[in-house]
Image (cartoon, rainbow, N blue to C red; front, side):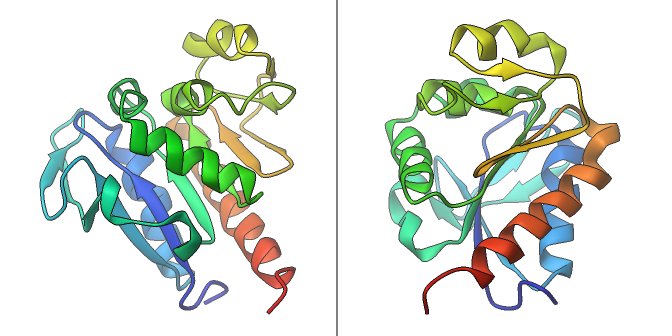
Length: 180
């Protein structure tokens, strides 16, 4: 229960990668975190690429980054949709400005690219968006999980155990070092 009572925000839209959504969310909840699923509409069911559903708690415009200790962005095709919402970009930028942990995996780097926060960071992702990250100023490496300051990045579903553990560890570290 390393994160007992701490709140983490997770973005969602249609066609998220099912494992990349559910594995970290369940791991965070096992660690005691409250994970709010946030999408274009609150109290709405969204479906993963393979049909697994998830229901949002809130809409993007109903949440404040100041209520959360971290942000999670899953992969799949959802990030290409997510990065088009001004509230997603604003929230991502707010988490980044507050130096709160932001975890992203696979194609989720697209959201961080569109939020213009990857320049100067070392990151990983699915090789399919390597050029996008590099063109946005990131240094891309082929590793299962990479942490550079407040950004935790992962490649793809087989890396979820290491990626999810590291995200939990970074949230615990962040929480311990906050001025209470």
